[in-house]
Image (cartoon, rainbow, N blue to C red; front, side, top):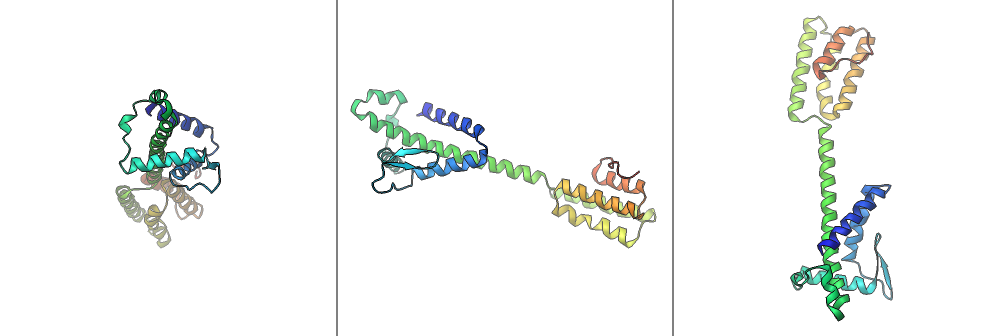
Length: 219
């Protein structure tokens, strides 16, 4: 069983690499093997198309039977030592093959679901890292307050400037880090073009918030 499962997983990785949409391939593969254990073959059908797998009805029915027995604790897989064993069974060879397939496909389905869960966790982790966490938002708020205080000291306490900078606090919560950075850059460029802020002050604000040099948009 172990060798068969390894072969199936190796086949999966090869097919996934060759697929034009690996994520869709994984979804189709899961759908296929969920159907394997649940679908009812059409009456008088000889074969059943499960999606990524086509089986004859006899094999499908026996695989489902052994799967139900295993789930119900009525099949002892301890009797199955290796794939070579079925070659020594004689008249039970076909039955042993279906028993092997039942066990292997159920383990393969578990593998597929764990693959999907891992990808979903990776996607969530990647997505969450694109946004400021609670501590980072607190730091942004403190920096914005410091910027506002410094603007007052420099004589830039006009209401329009204050409101524009103050609004960045809420913007930092709604936007990704990249979008927020682009938004701040746009505001500072607009304030510079409207001569509400001189270029050096705009650059210092950007530096204060992000620790990066201001892009060469303002001279």
